[in-house]
Amino acid sequence: MIKALILISITCILPGCSEVAPWQRGNLAKPNMALDPNPNLTHIRDHIFTSREAAQGSRVSSGGGCGCN
Image (cartoon, rainbow, N blue to C red; front, side, top):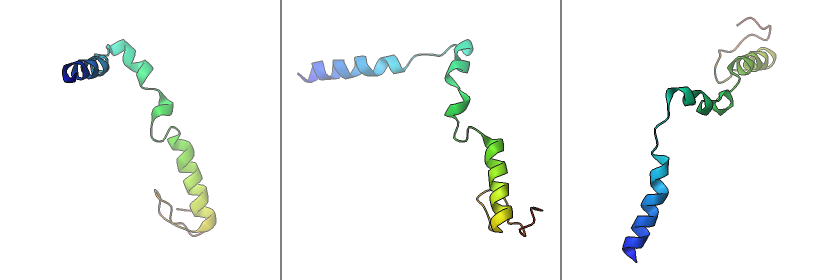
């Protein structure tokens, strides 16, 4: 019984250990899989938030409310 369980678990794990060809890596590295898919848009939104609120955001320094960081 234990041997059968080990055999089943090995056959389920081994397909995940396949090599990826260089021309296939582009298909796996989609831009929407990034932690921040739109870094420019995030930066603009952070800038607008800090300019309006005069509060310090997570990435930029605080402004004086005039938009001049």
